[in-house]
Amino acid sequence: MIYAEKQILIQEELLILNNLRALFWQRENALIVSDLHIGKSAHFRKHGIPISVNVQHNDLDRLSFLIAHYKVKKLIVVGDLFHAEVNSDMDVFKIWRDQRPNLEIILIKGNHDKLKDIVYDSFDIQCCKKELCLSPFKFIHEPKVKGNEFTICGHIHPGVSIKSKGRQRIKLPCFQVSHTQIILPAFSEFTGLAISKKQKSTSYYAFTQSSFFKF
Image (tube, rainbow, N blue to C red; front, side):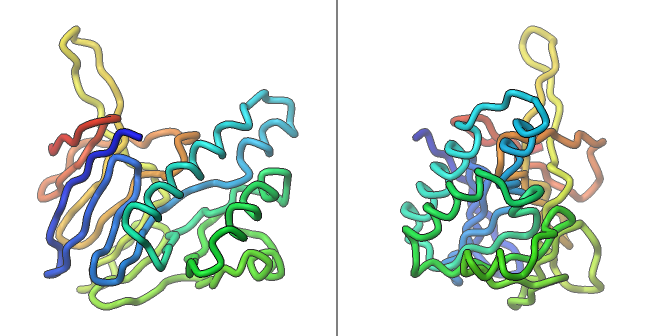
């Protein structure tokens, strides 16, 4: 698996961005991701849209690689772990979860995480309805400024649009980093991108399958 990473220092904490769409927090030995949308491909198939079963398998393969690579003990999901109703994709995730009984999973619920508590309990997932505070960070789903606190969030699936050599524009996912927050890219590749105008005092760490680019 082709892998690239970018180290940044935030609030005197070493954070590692990687092109597999996750953030690693070294001090907490925690992997932080957003918007996995497990169950989305099966949800689309249920409604007659032929989405490959490989979509979720590929996402879980990347997640497995990162957990092994960083020797992760804690997985923090800042919203939208699941996409819709309980469906066949959940069975695949259940097998994946059962193979990692020592992995702590914490979910800050997003707008798509509407399953009953018993479902989260069956996956041994600790849920937070609104936020999780682990100094010096606050983890939430939707990007919001929380006073003087530094937030790590997701939800909007940030991306950038850049010109290629042929003058065509290409869209890339990115980490959006300001002095108050980090907005993570959607972990699932089966998502769109929110392209916005560059904001002052904000850095955009876009990535391809092998490289990082800072804007």
